[in-house]
Length: 302
Image 1 (cartoon, rainbow, N blue to C red):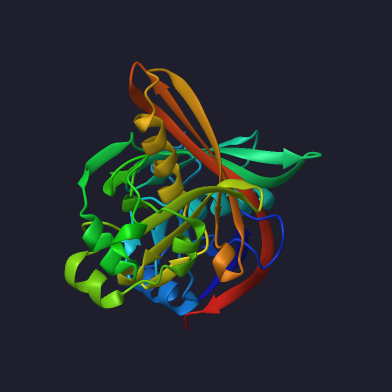
Image 2 (tube, rainbow, N blue to C red):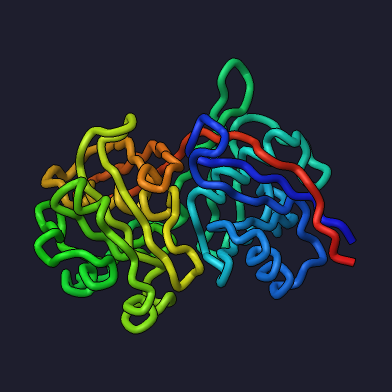
C-alpha cells in the first residue's frame, strides 16, 4: 500500500520559509496508530490526513497530528491542506469549485476561503471553529520558569498571562521587549511537570514592534507535543487576535493584525489575522496567509 503525500511551506511566499506541513491526500484505511506513526516519521509540527467528509455538503474530514498527539484544530495545517486540495482540483472524485471549502474536524467545522493571484491559488484563510474562550489566568512565575525568562520580562499591559482558545488552548503571555522574546528558551522539564498537554498545547509569547512586515512578533513552545518551537502557529495567533480584541475597551470593532513568527528560527512567517467584536463579545476570528509547494512523494506501507 502506498500513500501519496505533499509538503508545503505555510504562511510564507518563499520556499523554506514559514511552517512546513505534510498532507496525506487520501488517508482512507489508516488507523489512528498508523497516522500517529506517520506524523512522528515526518517529525514536522503537524501532518494532516484527509478523509471523505461525513456530510456531502463539506469538502473533507481532516485529522491533524503532531509528532506525539492528535489536535482538535490547528491553523497552519488547515491553510496548507486547503492550498494542496485546491491545486489538485478534485477531492474524492468531486471537483473543487469556487473559493470556499469546509473541513470537518474534532473542534467543529472549519470554513476555508482560498486566496488567488491572477487566478492561481496562492494561500487560504480560515475562520476558527470555536468562539474565543478564556480559561483563566496563569502565574507569571510559571511562564518565566517554562520559558527561561526573568520574571521582570513578563508584561501585563494588554493582559495578564492566561489561557485562551479558539479551538485549541494555549497559554498567552506578553513580553516587555523584543530582546526578551529573542532570549526565551523552552524548559521541557517545567512543561512536563507543570503544563500537561491536555491543559494547554503550549506557551505563546508575543511582543509589539514592527519587524519583517508584521506589527507583532510571536514565538510558541510546545515540547510536550514534540515541538520545541513552532515557526508559525495559526491556532495560537487567531486566538491572540481574539484575546487582544476582547481586551480593547470598544464594544464593537474589527481588529486586523499582521503577526510574525519564526524569525528567530530562520523561518520567517507572516499571518494576517482578524477578530470581530460585537456588543462587547468576540464573535469571529480569522487567520490566513500564503503557501509554497515543496515536495511530492509516496509512503510505502507494505
